[in-house]
Amino acid sequence: MKLFFYDLETTGINPGRHGIHQISGQIVIDGQVMESFNFHVRPNPKAQIDPQALAVAGVTAEQILNYPPMEEIFGKLIAMLGRYVDQYNKNDKYFLVGYNNTSFDNNFLRGFFLQNNDKFFGSWFWSNSIDVMVLATQYLLNERAGMENFKLSTVAKKLGITVTEDELHSADYDIALTRAIYDKVK
Image 1 (tube, one colour):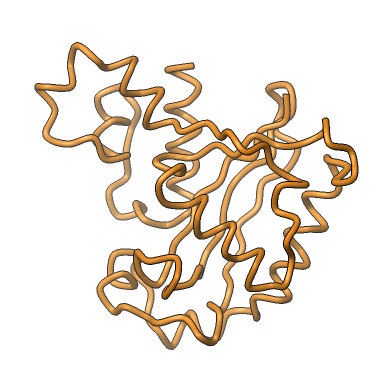
Image 2 (cartoon, rainbow, N blue to C red):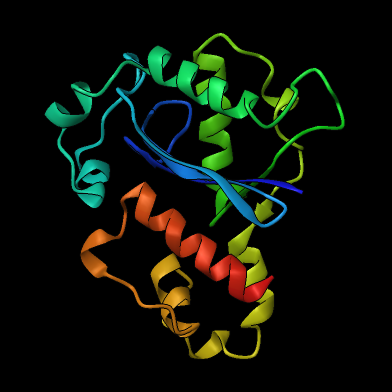
């Protein structure tokens, strides 16, 4: 089984108006980490930048505008994907795995492909993805009412996973928490 664990940090919450500035994750095949990645990316030049979104991630507009251009990072991402999946084999794909990815990250990632003139997102990824938030919901069903919220850090703490508050909202740290939650609830 080929899993593409990932998390994004963005310049806002609307994939039609905002862009990606960090993509982090792991490629896991049959339970073994094949590769970890942490790409900082200059957002699409047409993307709006919401200062509040950047504040959550602890970055500035000046910082993200000095990251490598999206075309360069997209090329690195595709090269990495191609090391483990044959995009021309319709039976060889990754499952996308993230926390709340089905309603947020997946739309941004698909948009990142389109912004780089690549219409072949579906050549790499199955259309059905694994949302760790949904898995954790089932696992914590009887305890949910007593929880303040169902954010990544809250769920991790509830499951006994140590959380370093000042590292939250960095995609590479968030994906480490997501993977730890996944390993507990799957």
